[in-house]
Length: 144
Image 1: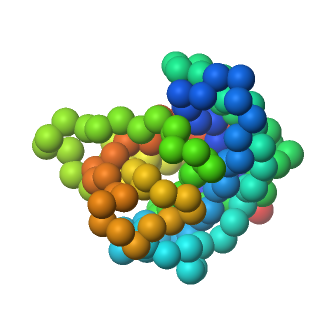
Image 2 (image 1 turned 180 degrees about the vertical axis):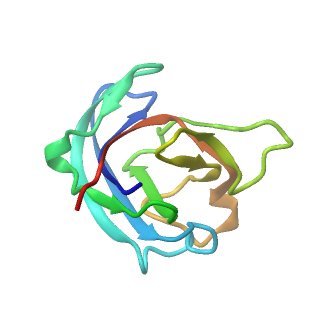
């Protein structure tokens, strides 16, 4: 089924710090597209107050342009802060880049790449693969 991604919440180590967050998206996988912002579409550029370790930092829905995702299609997202403080998880050794990490009847979240640069870097030293996004996707079934 089709869905509309309405907002994203992230985890950051910064507590009570106002920080810039940007979210980009592109149709298809991020693999081989994580070195340049070319081909990515900006869907959010705002400031949020970091809530600190193990607390959800939400990007307000009114700061996020909804993203329509057709059922069965892949949509990549790039979430970045102006500081290097987005929390990601390193998966077990048997988990590979682009594996499905978690899923439900509506969507699959795949293992991706952590990038230690803002906005993107063509330096392989800035890329951490595989990496698991620590956040929450707010979405609704789309009827359009």
